Length: 134
Image 1: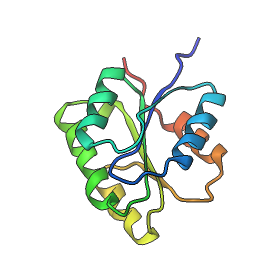
Image 2: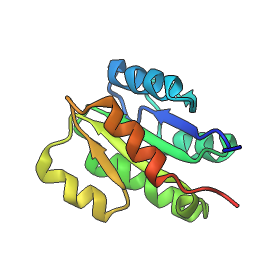
Image 3: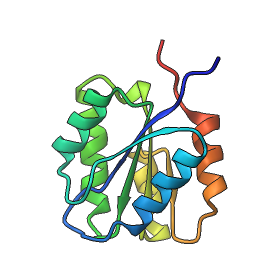
Image 4: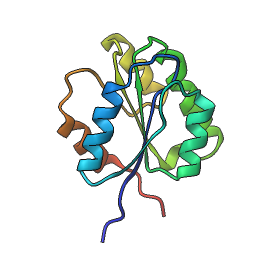
């Protein structure tokens, strides 16, 4: 039997809008995944600590504040420092300009979902790309 996929949905930075994060969390739960939602206004350190403590397979970060160019790569770098990045699928969603997406991918964000993305596309991406721990 397949092991349930564990996902941390996190909100880095100071923006206080989490409707999208909650929609994603619910869709992933309904798709059979175990979802932990970190809540609002998380620092990169808090997100990484939660991801490590919860031993998640997937980290999804939702950001609307415009600080994605700093916060998301900071999380990735800290995951690498902890030695867990290679075991984890890391994606982002939110209001992120198309021009910024290639740089985020170069810095370790494996996919970026913008407003209007079909929820099935997110679920399929996770199921097809999750990195199973041995």
